[in-house]
Length: 523
Ligand code: XMP
Image (tube, rainbow, N blue to C red; front, side, top):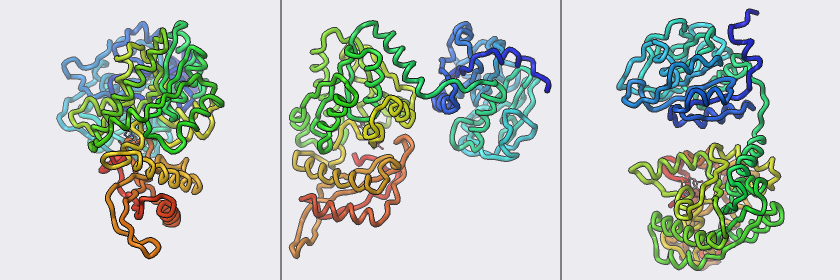
């Protein structure tokens, strides 16, 4: 077989991928897909100097998509000398347009955005598109289109509305796709990325997700320079994994704080504190602040006000505890990538849906530098890492529990009586969902207390009590969700157990809405 010009060089090259980020909402998804192929990758901003890109010693470079047009004033453009780096390039969406534009192809501005599924037809044999089938569905999200590929390039794929949907110059190892291979909607996306990594760039699978924890451990050790760090533990998988990584890095210099806000589930504090101390050997202090939270929430009905109050008091309590730790310089947080996007969406847009308070707030007030070892990861990746770190399954596979806790699962104002009713109902729901084998298969299952009274009949007597709504959803990341089609028998058992075990409830209903249009939590 004839070797293409750069192959000899590639054989000595590293197996690292550099993703140059032009601002796409999918950039982290590209990174995730590369990691799934056991290849190490890093994301650099498009403004990175060429020297730094070369110093990274990439085995391949991916140019991400982005919201701009190459013709926009201040569009993210990189010197075309980047293409002198002798490694394979894959330009995706804007990345492909930038490639075409830099190498004297023709990109045409357009006011019409093509968004959604399109049918790609392979019109010329291509190593990148090998194994895709002549026609397949791809996911498009672009405004401008390429009308002429640069000289030396061949067009390999088209759709009905985008003639240049895939092009390549195999001699120079330059490849471009107008669609997004990294999103699940592109049928042969995984095949294409594999072709690029292994067939074209000849990378070797040398990296595993578990290496991530080792890299972060060394990084944290390096940046903290002998100083102390604080970590707020919530009992959830994200903060726990972040704390365990930090604990490996700096041991006794890590001080953890667990705030009991009085809005937790039954026995939650005792259970997680035991785990933290006995299984994970974390240095953790529990602060009982329930009365402060409940006092501040008294009579408050509005969900956003509840969230704001809980967020504010959490900061106050945490701040006063943190001040007791002398010379702390860092704050470790278990922020995940979807939290970053949600927060940007939530805080940055004019339409506030829910002000999740987990990200931001704390470090500025405390004057601590932020360490977020999981910031690039998705929840299922964090679970794999946690498992490798020896964190017990009970913590790793816990369903998400919101920061404001049970306060946003009681409609309207809250008090101790309502909290206790909800805790008992939650115990029933969780134990039945675990018994059914569904707990680890679904995103969340929980009860919501609706303090509206309805009439019932129990033991020949009229009852007039509140309603529990049961919510169970599947979801990949909490951003969209479907209600679970729970078996009638499970529903029946949950319903009858709640009615007989939870005083104050005489009716159970099941929530059959998805997100959107509803949200997962009721408040
Ligand atoms: P929604 O209700 O927004 O929930 O569809 C999406 C996911 O986020 C969780 N959630 C929160 N988590 N603080 C949190 O830490 C909050 O204020 C909050 N509100 C919702 C929810 O449990 C679901 O997993």
